Image: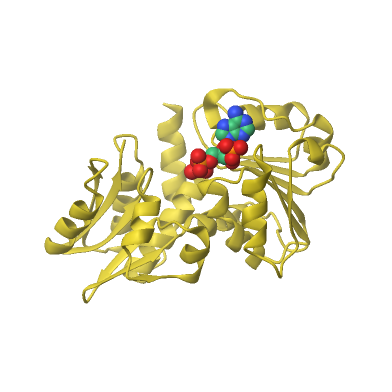
Length: 271
Ligand code: ATR
């Protein structure tokens, strides 16, 4: 049977095996997908071992996305721009790397009927998570994309990668009097309860607030948006299933239906 893995450290919390097994049943694909805890210096060995054992592909999560990027002999353009890989495809001795996080985010926004085209988007954060979604957002032709980060130079470095697009880099403080349609939180503060210094005025200007993180409780950012009555408040569970669906499609050339899997995960999360 074709073998797939998700490599990470830690990995016990990963929902990917559940998601991919559901996709496989739904689409009648005979695959085996499991999670694998990899020691920090053993990533390459884990990949080689999978390839030698009928491995056809893998997902890669923290902290291995950059190592995966370095290991690939071929990369998609979007993986090259992100500097990270979350999907590996093994074929004829080639390790091909791609990143589906951006598709996961965009497909989830579109699923919620949120138009990115011609909208003004604020992306909070300039780490790996932010970097991984910028190209996919720009492909939707927004009017502008503003990247706000605590460390301005990191936001500027991402903006500099896209000289032909309307990408601005700012500090959090500089967003105070700006107006956006969509605000996406890609910082790692997530469920830690840390409030980002984004003003109520900026948040209430938006019709959509999205956090890439998900959990039983909304993040501090989504709580703030809720208090301010923002129309669409969305967590990152749909992005997780969306990126998995895009990986599954790359491997199997079949598009799974995300809705029933997302519903099952949402139910699990609330139990
Ligand atoms: P990830 O892969 O999750 O993106 P990362 O690459 O370490 O992780 O990036 C973390 C992001 O969250 C960065 O944008 C970071 O801001 P800095 O670049 O200034 O470090 C942001 N971040 C983390 N903790 C934060 C905090 N307490 N307040 C504001 N931003 C924070």
